[in-house]
Length: 387
Image (cartoon, rainbow, N blue to C red; front, side, top):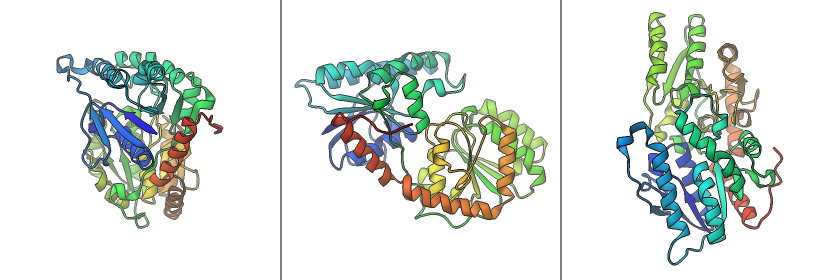
């Protein structure tokens, strides 16, 4: 098959870009694949054909530029694919966002006779209120249901995402469960790390409300006076307005020296942070499929995560970690204290997590599931996965 994957902002990196590249690399072994984006391929990208469509920066619009730039990107992709001379033979197009799926699927299906598949990295109706600018929220709300209805298939990264797609209008027979996968080598580890020691906690992700960093810091402040060895490392881009008052509280309570705030780190260097951590905490208020959870599993670390989104799929509680009630700082603190008070359990959970990662969440396993799914979509075979 000839497969085209479309993603805006591929060169900016991030979990969605990584997923896109991993999927194309997996499919390229048996199919002719290419990627269309508005930026060039990122450093270290696989040897795949890239096509670039140039979109003006619209800097004069400042923070309002996102939607106009996305519309221009969609129009240019539509012209590139739907009105090429001579017409291109394309069997399948993979979109990684709702708006291009909603706006271009009917055109491509009619003009090219190809199948259109949307890889579902989230759902606007699953996001906490206020996550995005109201204009951006309105734009995605407008495009979400049409995207589900127009797509020939939806690839969901977790059972929760699959349910959201069906609730939003997707045909349940056209929704396929295809989780991502990661390998320990991606974070600079050759297999899992040595057993954990101490009471060092690790958070990796954007330091913002949607990721629940405020909940984690609240729980840390509650427990730290009673657990003098407890330390926390937070890695990610900060929401200054959210963090500033919390940092002042840490300072006033004499806890600032026990919390490290680090900027985003190169992915290949994250293994060292996982190796020194006893426990990885993922307190997100919404989560599609946590890359951090899979990285922690690959490193042989237990995970304490909120019971939202794709987290229950990844954290096999109580075998590989624990879950707490999403948004509940008190429950987070209770589960956290339970874990740090049982170092032997943390070691056993980490070992079980490493085994589960190897069995279910490696890149090879993800590639096998994706290839099987794409073949069935092309053959017109409906999904038999029960969510």
